[in-house]
Length: 380
Image (tube, rainbow, N blue to C red):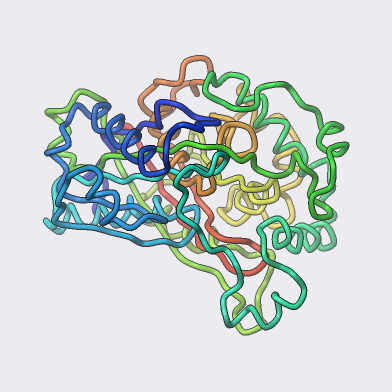
């Protein structure tokens, strides 16, 4: 993929976020799609490429009334839609389509017309997991948390700072679900979900969705919004590795390296980042594996003021999955927020002089198997 040849030109969420008990999951897809297409200044008839996960591309394309010439139904968990961005860019460059719509929506809170999503163990890992009841993300993620704490001496207080800072960002976002300030003490006083994870270490559950429109850089000249160019991208998966798994290395170590190499930028060039935050530990582990700090230094990295509004490295500026929204798979919201920041549309939470943003998504559970996708985006 060549630099700056493909761009995000439409980025929007559903009209409502939070609790939406009167709209089905497929209707949420359509709402987000129409909002993103309007954001791009295009029409539904301009779309000739389509990608989604959970629902099949056939379902949503039928509901929207489109017949694309290129489709992608890649489903690898919460970062699926970020892989779709990379795949769409490659398809556009190859001449397989001109304008791609990517959608995601879930009725995660209200369960209205929700398509079941299997998250249980696969047959290979199941022989070890099923007998012990390891079947939900909250019971899988404590494994790497405990390993981090034992190996590097990272404390509960340091991990809790991720939730505290993201709540501060959420307070600046009128669309965020949780805005009331919290402290490290509040996080540690919240009830244990699966030791050592407390309630406020875990993402919220909400309804909603989002959509993106991707097209060639050449075509952006005729569109109304400032384009957000795709500089580089990487994707991969991590798994049990026949028992040789290092719990401290996650998919970001590979996908991030590829994204930086392909983008031709350095860590110091990144003005802000959107990091998947299914749990507080996900942010800490991802920052380490992406190379923003050394292994074992993530606790110190997140516990200072670096990640705050006035800090040197703002992250999850919408409040993230811990405070803003998390319908179940959140990757598409990372790209939407990064695009809005690069277009200067974030009002009180706008990062000053934001020119290059990184978005990294995780799908699945760090403690057993997961996917990773890294995108580096720019308004230049």
